[in-house]
Image (cartoon, rainbow, N blue to C red; front, top):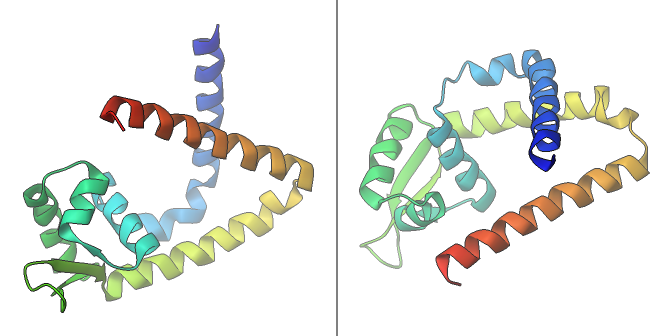
Amino acid sequence: MLVERMKNIFQTLDQINYALLNHYEEVLEYKLTPKQALIMEHIHVHGILTVNELAEKMNMSASAISQLLSKLEDGHFIERTINPESRRKIDVTLGSKGEELYKLYEEVDKQVVSKYYSKLDDEVIDQFEYVVNKIYEVIVEEQNKVKGE
């Protein structure tokens, strides 16, 4: 029964995403793969990460991350520089296209929030926030058990 309920919830979430997709058409024109987009998100959130930190966050090898970074660097989405404190480390930051992409994301997110989510009352927003945080907490806890932490 739980599997069926969750399947229905996921279908509704997919329908929400499809309904909002037209607002994100400009963002989609950047044509990033899911892994590239996730790398970009980590860099955006943290501001600066080393190649090894990205590899750890993505659960990938440093060489696999480097291949993905090369394509992003060619497109000016990211920049790689030698870490001034440790010349053996490479720092990764957003490049000009990456900054442009996140400014566009912020604009579109504001429009979506203003047009749709602002129609929800505070209690619904509080419940939604609680549920999303709880799901994340459970996932992290279970993944840490698998890692043996």
